[in-house]
Length: 299
Image (tube, rainbow, N blue to C red; front, side, top):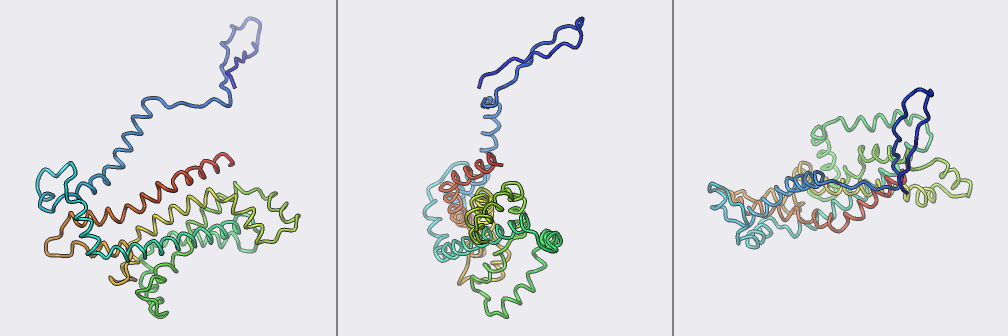
């Protein structure tokens, strides 16, 4: 669509003529300037600096890390330190446990939060506003306050040192419920639900064929945030699990426990714990960003 010139009419005959206004077409694309690229490159370098330093430290020896100035380039001990960290922390079992825990928590949180968000957004029932306020209010309670009663409850169930102790308390998220509710209020027209009801669709079919397709972009974002949070969770797993059945963060806590901690091995373990997140984002980042853009265009 090309640009067009619109000339405003003069109020009086003696008034000076106004300059024509140039109205940009609706289909024109904005192009980033050189300043934008410079800012983006700077932000990328700042964001990558901790990861690069972790890889550099993991490729050096503990003696070299203790010297001044610190090393600024990679050494030749990366694979040796990675193997040491893998053996000392039992990363094989920890990786499997963390993938199971994070995947289960992500699937449960996305499913239940979408269903609860749909109920708060589009269904009419008594005390819905009060229940929504109570749900949001739980986000103001520090999670540290629930550690002791939660551990006692899990011990009474006989689940201490088992993975379900970490999975069960986090299957539903107050933030996820509020997030999905806010998205579905705008993205899901009530007329679409009414049309499905008129066609004879049951509640299950409405959720499966109407709610889930409309909520897919927000579900992708919530899933990514939940998976990262579950993968990096440390406080509750270190309390609920032991060294025989750990997650990645619990296993990394076992590194560097000697009289003189080996910082290079600790950094190698941290690098091992970060790589799966990077691989997941590289594999699914395009789909997630595409879903976000699709939801933005539809909204």
